[in-house]
Length: 135
Image 1 (tube, rainbow, N blue to C red):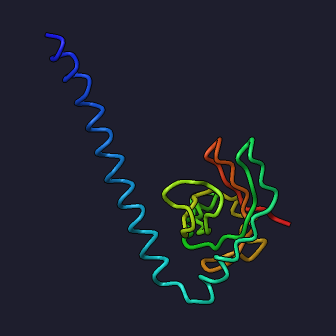
Image 2 (cartoon, rainbow, N blue to C red; image 1 turned 135 degrees about the horizontal axis):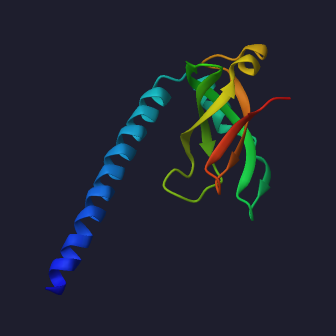
């Protein structure tokens, strides 16, 4: 009887793990496809990521990124930014990664941003949040 409860508890966990694995694999494939289409100059510019203001306690920092995707959504713009990870010690260390964020449409247009624009981004791993730093 105890095994039955254990089995019933493990099935949802296994299903959730499978869904996360499939989603993660698809996201990684999308990033790899975009990265494969970058010029050597763009890749090198990303590799020179210029990490600044790293806070080990809060796990926050700023660095260079490149806009790879833009989708308008009302008065906001959904933006995917590629960046080179030299900070977080995980399976993406020393790889080009992506972060998704939202920007006010007016601010986005005011700075003339578009796919291919390089921007400074603020990343907060504790809150799983990132923003473009407008200077």
